[in-house]
Image (cartoon, rainbow, N blue to C red; front, top):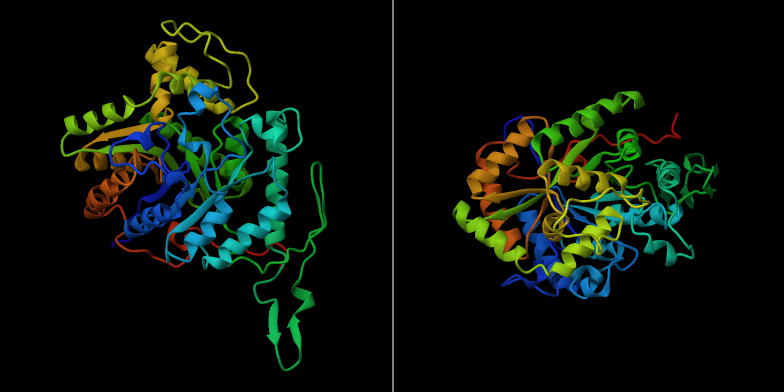
Length: 442
């Protein structure tokens, strides 16, 4: 491999495919969301394709949609990520393992302990996807009547991040002597008590897990709102972005990277990976036929429900043949709502057309074509400073995943923009990210 810049690839699994009808596609594993053997097969295939990471989304509530749509959703059940990923860690050697954990409905000590443990079990391949939670029904599962206000969720997230990373630094890397002759297990001078007292959190520490192999597991975020972009610029090392147009990708990329200077961070300390929903065919027509067949399996009830979730507003009473009306402010994802509103205006879409669109790939970037045309698009985004790589979303599994690894990956490798082997042993090394110093070490 040359020393030129290389594309980074993650596999975004929600918890398997993002497409509502993926489980119904001919040949798909209908039970993939809750079948460990299938997950093993998927992750081993991703590792064969030299993917940087397996990225598992998570929800702490059943999706807040009408039963007519919910009964058609395969995401109604899935494994807890921090139970699944340690199991996958022992069957893989190289691929990063990224799990979602909410800063709104978790305690930082639990999050710090579980991710530190995953990093040790995987020999340095853990990543934490920091989310503030957008589903208001999650509140009701944790003793609250309603979701915490958007701005407050982000203030708590910033403090939560500070506490978790501080707990990861509870021990110096060489704190544990384990001297059997003297009976001294650790050096007390290399143990650090966080003793944090803040607006939302009070945590003493120290963590009862040794410092992670990577120093800190890789920090991942997906914020696109103003607050989310600022938090990403300050804290994130990987951002899961969602532009679906090249110009929008370039604008987002430049904006977030530019904000990093205010936090004394280099642009190289952050990798921006837009989601890319990819359908491969032997010809353009075949790829379009596959996509049409998949979309045709989405029931109208699902499209309307998914649109309601993404907009944070019940659209079931809207005129499906009319433009999207003005919407009230939402306490769900503000960036998600704005993106769809802007798309509807830009493309002159009716409510029904917008619902049909998000019923499939949730308004992310879609690349449908041959291996050559798909690689052309990916390379263009990569070389035109719209991304550092992609989080790939597979249309159905296992076929969609195997199509990408067996047909797209070799084409990217042939062009010299993607690795042919893993460069390091940890997720940080493979992403080209530095190992953070211990904040308590002078």
